[in-house]
Length: 336
Image 1 (cartoon, helix red, strand yellow):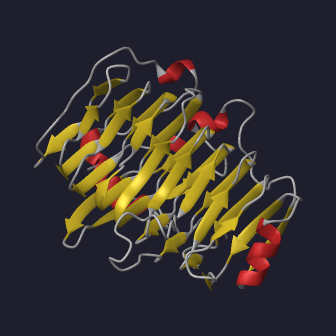
Image 2 (cartoon, one colour; image 1 turned 60 degrees about the vertical axis):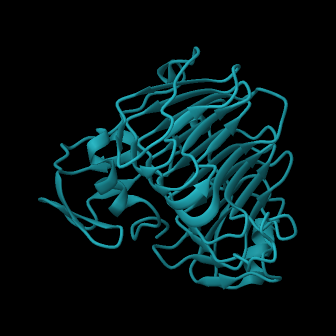
């Protein structure tokens, strides 16, 4: 596909052509440009950009870490920091979720930053955090924990945090959720991530309140079973330009009293691509493509207009697999 120059979705885009090869790999060849064809804004978009915005550790010092001890030291500090992760860091004990305090940016340097055998935890009251350009991987356990009860090892777990931007990460093979947005986490944007090879991809809810606002765009979710995402009691959820591939249970699910808007997404081999599971929930959909899929494609109820809250420019649905095949996950020109 060809895409004209624009600044849609936080990226400066030059014209490019794309080709597909086997093994879930896509390649974009920039035409008349250099590098990987896009530069990426350091400013959050979507709902994370509203209500005062999300700047992470921009007000503080910048440090580079290559050890687990240093990562924990700065992530848990009371001061603002931009923490550049420049190595593959193994977490101990296995499955531990590193606490991240308010006013932090944790960003991988190019494609070198990895969190191995653990993840991150943003607790109640944590504000203004950016987690970006990292590979977070491998806490999956054997079948002695089939319900993920004993070993609740998430990639990123948030419990009533706010103003959070999760961008350009690869999160895979975790024992529980790849991302869990729990309780009343709000003003959340999850963008340009590649997440997969897990039972549970992205769960949202665990609350009776209906206050959360979130934007979920340009994510490649693949080879998962459930929660892609499952959205429970979210006041305003805007999903666009997501690519769901090889999903065995269900895709996007509006639950509780959620209002969910889906635009220009792409579903390939997805069971029940989008669905409502309570009469109080609502879901609208436009512009998406569904192929090789079966089961529910259900809309209903009254949702909302995302442009009443922020501006955005979605890509065409047919271009989504190729765009995300190159640009989801860590990028060489972020965090340098």
